[in-house]
Figure 1: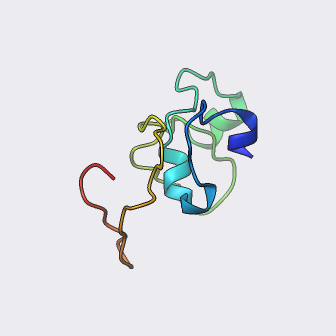
Figure 2: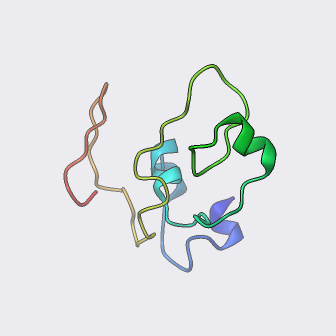
Figure 3: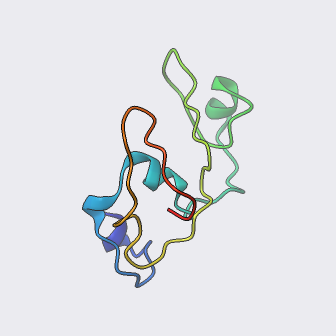
Length: 88
């Protein structure tokens, strides 16, 4: 869906190599977005909107990585922490 919408800006990115973490870290989100009042009331401190849930979603590195060709295709990760080397 992101590829068809043009969010990858002409980069070659294999969508099957993306995890939920990779998606929220992509620098494609408007960080100056004025959240609707319902979002602010649900959690005034988050930069994104979380309306439901018993737990706060923490998204470290939210919207910080510019898309690049072959993104994450060679980045290893091992459960349960899924730590990646620098640059991945």
